[in-house]
Image 1 (cartoon, rainbow, N blue to C red):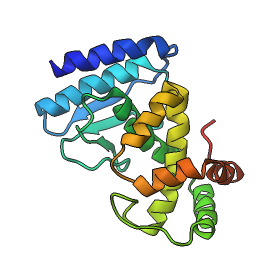
Image 2 (image 1 turned 180 degrees about the vertical axis):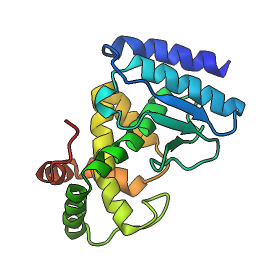
Image 3 (image 1 turned 45 degrees about the vertical axis):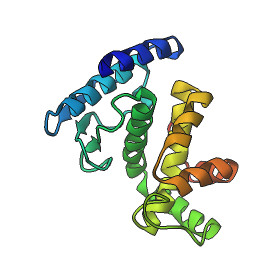
Length: 195
């Protein structure tokens, strides 16, 4: 029944989707639980529904129930968004963008240095931010790029709903939304946009 609801949601969203040109992505399950299987099915539908070529930097994904989402060494997503295609898409894009930024690490480090001067006092730790200062500053960039990617793929209204619903990185997302022009300038100056 859960899968049916997800598929109906994707079918409703499909008219907004562009021509699909997403490279093939291998999705593995860590434990093969029903929740992981449902998440895999939802992610496969998401990948089939949207053109994500521009945002696909690694082609292997592991779904692991209970895991914290992370990009390295292998993009790993938890099974928490099996019934939320938009949230699953946003999470997928977020982790893919870490791979993009890793390829241009020197430029990202320069952006982080600038962000340190703009935001000298930041929270550390969940739910407000990341586990350390560097990761928090780096996530200002990653989350900004995630919002841009989400808007391109699913539009502003659905992106706004997804970002408001995220229970983690609340300070980071709030700062990106409140200071979008400022962060956009940092990202542009350091040439971090996805081309």
